[in-house]
Image (cartoon, rainbow, N blue to C red; front, side, top):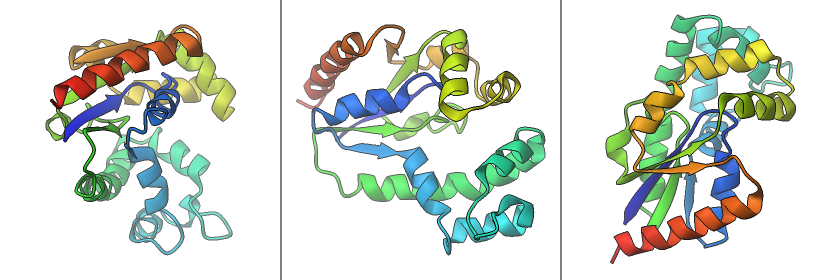
Length: 197
């Protein structure tokens, strides 16, 4: 099976592109969805996070306090590394498990930190979703109700746009409307199908 690694900076439109691939019945393995599932109450990752970061990282109801954890890790590189050492191995183990169950011609593996985690060898093709930084900032501020400083902290914690693009086998520029984006996904779908023949 041909494995397409879909990546891009925060606010670039990765989820929108994944939704468009779903219209072609393309299986999507989403690292963000896996990460959310891994920190549900009672899960090993959540227990490890609470032990590592203390009750500050938890809500009163025993769920992950995402806003507080985000604040901790983006102000402390060591804490960020500790979180990644807990989450990344578990995420990639689950990605491999889901991959082993697929029999489709190709699949999309959406991994925001594909380049940062140096896991390019996991996939056959890297598809980068790209847009100017100003667009990223505007989208994330609106979507997540974050300040400009908070958004910039996240962007600065990721590889820079230029470096990400150097790893791309294909680039999808998400700078126009959804109709344009849909046409680009249609073309890529046909391209990926041909790779499997």
